[in-house]
Image (cartoon, rainbow, N blue to C red; front, side, top):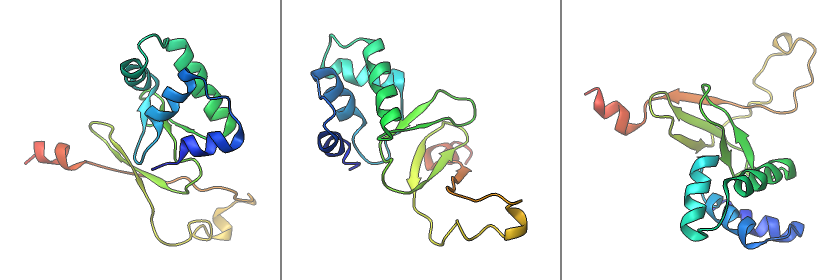
Length: 140
């Protein structure tokens, strides 16, 4: 689990019923939902929640650094609640499924000094691409 709700409680973020539902929808492993998907799932739990409320809550969570906004291949932005757990992403090139991955090795030291062009590297983001099992099975 991403422990999003626990982190928000610790920070004292006011958990209204609408905010709680958005956080509950996002909480979990390998969760990379679009805002529309978050809204659709939130409506199942709290029918009166508006799309604007969902977008506002997502924006606040991103600003707080509790959720990471992802954009892959020009598709709709997705929201990742695993902001506090270092990881990279594996993305299906066909259907867009995203999985969190944890490669071994230190990527920060993997870039040779001459390839840094004087930059001080503070963060590394890696995206692995390929076909998920379902999409790869369509080609068989």
